[in-house]
Length: 158
Image (cartoon, rainbow, N blue to C red; front, side, top):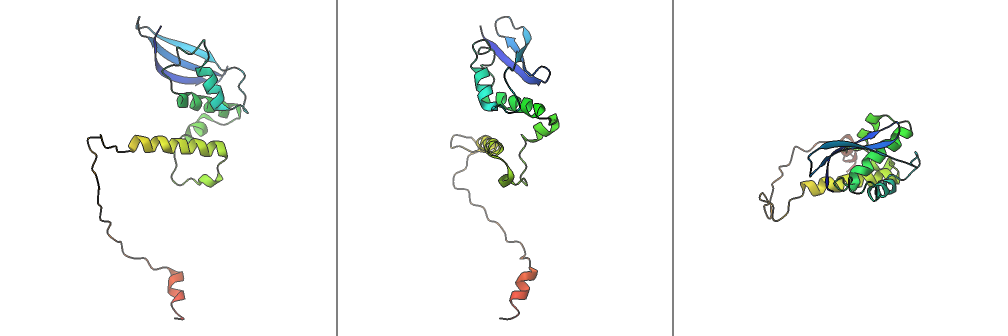
């Protein structure tokens, strides 16, 4: 049997992954609720997502769903179990250029770096791209130099 995943989501009570899929042969669209068992607020989301994707009962249905998407859904479930709101969980997936990455723990830092890698690969220009230009030269005009107060004071004695 072949299935095509259309949408994924989470259900908080009971903790479940909700999958909307289409049966390719009959063209029927159906909803499958996959319970997430033995998952707590201290669980590793990547291992839980991997075990769910490789589970023999759900493997055929989750074939079209990426590992990173399942990890994101598990992170949302874990955050909900820890008492965070859905908005907080979704905001953690966005990249903020002003965010200080030195203050993040190792898991969140790895997640942010993974998001940056995905964004880089998405925006990357390859040689076979139609709008690829080799050896681009750009002229950056200098803006007026700003004077700093500490710079003026140091010149007084010299």
